[in-house]
Length: 63
Image (cartoon, rainbow, N blue to C red; front, side, top):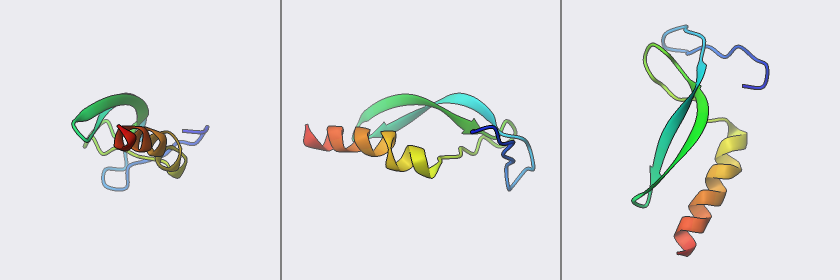
């Protein structure tokens, strides 16, 4: 969370880091991301979406 105290837009709660399971093409992987402790909304940073998630997506599509 890069030293910032991100808050959920919906609930106003401070996000906490939590391991979340993502699924794509019947495969799953886990990554620790900021999550609202009240409503469970997950924050995906641009860096994560264009970095690690894009790498996993490309690797799975190549198989």
